[in-house]
Length: 261
Image (cartoon, rainbow, N blue to C red; front, top):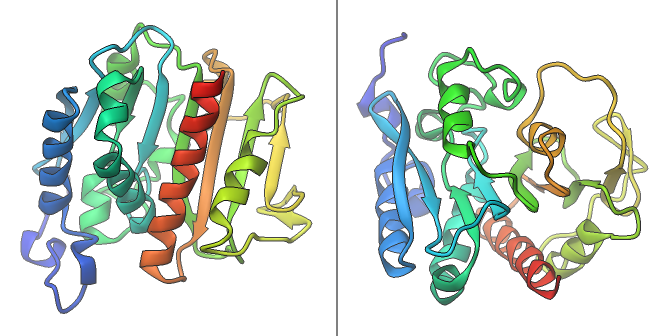
């Protein structure tokens, strides 16, 4: 394993405003959320001395709502958005049926890199049980098949908000509803093709998957039986505050839709 320089990894306020890449600060706030929300939490893995937390609501069942952020370490707006949403939603978390991976790649967040400590893109490994980080995730998720999953990300090349929706019910348009909630803070990415895929008003939808290798988190969850997976992207070159607030709105919209069902 490569050497880890904490002095380089842990940012000063003069370099990173809002402590967006201060892993210890982010995790402290999540422990406070877990206590206030009466959630069980455990450390499923450690990387570069940082824990990877897994939180479960008090009433968690076999088909929870799944929330995650921070698979890519250079996407701080997604990490802060999920945290800010949770801090505002303690009452919801006390009665919810939800599991949360609040910061999947803490070493990457500290270093502000897409990959982990060794430069590996974890979001291309969720079908690789031989990788210890992914193996730990699989053990944590044993016995759970989420009814819906939300994976929060950011995109360097994005021209606004967009999302991927994998949905077994072709009549549902959940991503459209969520983007509508957030577009008052950031515009949508209106390109007809995003990341090489056809898009309509910022939504990339699929019901059937090609034979993919090196699966991202959302696709692995969908293949495992999750009915609807939503991957949301905010433009990482935009204002951090707007990005994190847009992520809050996206999660709020998903939770409202989930409660209606």
